[in-house]
Picture 1 (cartoon, rainbow, N blue to C red):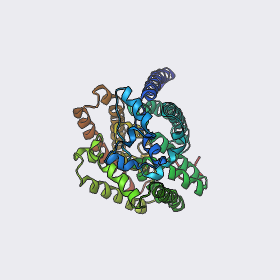
Picture 2 (tube, one colour; picture 1 turned 60 degrees about the vertical axis):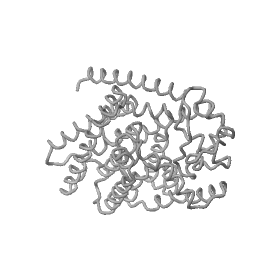
Picture 3 (cartoon, one colour; picture 1 turned 90 degrees about the vertical axis):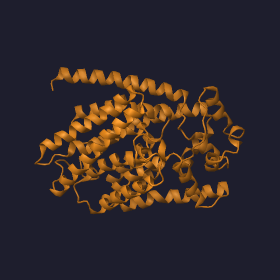
Picture 4 (cartoon, rainbow, N blue to C red; picture 1 turned 180 degrees about the horizontal axis):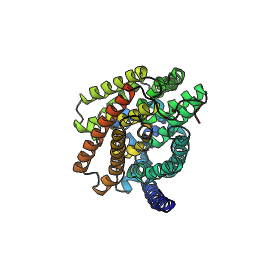
Length: 399
């Protein structure tokens, strides 16, 4: 590709990314309704956010969260509490709840933009360190230009926050900082539907210390929350899950959404999680990128997710780019083309159709077909016992 074409590609993507940042920031300054500010503030104030989510008592409209709900009422977008995060996770937001919401959402926007920049830096140091500069830059610009990232910013989601801390945990682990890595991994669980499956990578790399350390703060936090609310330890686990189960059928193309929120869809999720866990122990060394990307692809459909989480398709490029077996280059081209198609569809096409039911159905067909092909392709890759041409993530000596 000559320099003129590269410059044209850069120009187009930079303009698209700039518009995406502007539009996402404008939406965030108006809403950020998914921030979970109200749930964290309620918990800090001794109000059980889970009971208020399931059986509202009216205290939210008159208590410390009243200003939060008033802002949305006046904006014509009334909100209800959906505290689907465990209390130890909501505690991470306690410092921000000391700031009035009208300013807190500005701070959260700034933080999400910072998290994005740090994600790009850490991706270059870990998952995507081996690809050339042009392709890396194109991927990063695509990530920011796409609808998923823009919606992440606009609705005030936590996936950028969580994924940053996950990459930080990975980067620290590579450098032998096991305790700090475990603590960063612990923070990353805020979006546990995304990062809990990714945490299996630490089991695959036999980084058991980091994995165990990541669980300890949540045991402690759960006990503390139980004390704040005067509830039992097990209630602090069961109640968030009850709230989450009510959202099972409200995703985009995940198994819960496809089954209409059927209770048995949870069984599918557990089976997938079990299979990925077993795979983390039996998969041979040298399949780092293939396994990591599989975890990303699976995480997006095994539990509740909306399209705003599909910006994670960009980090998942690691397994697609690196999969270059000595035989079967036709299969690699098909894999690459299929990956490019789903990125284009979820990043740009769905927005044209306002994520209508029909467009989501088409997206589901494309995504699951790709997921099956990727899994089969990488399984064959593993069966051939071939390794990637470049050093994998998780190797402390990788350049």
